[in-house]
Length: 64
Image (tube, rainbow, N blue to C red; front, side, top):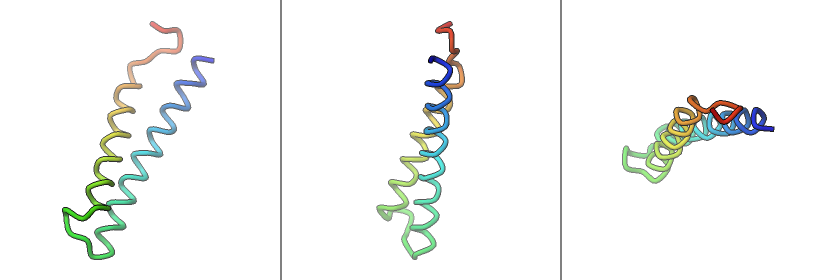
């Protein structure tokens, strides 16, 4: 059960990071500036996903 939770957490964190990058690139491609809502939210999503990935990196399935 613990390994499935950690694996799904890592997968969702990776998807969150990818979604943020796609949001930021899409907003920039559509002519938004660096402070456009899509860019700011995209960077925040990517940072949140990356932070969760980094925090989950040290987690073990056995609770060690």
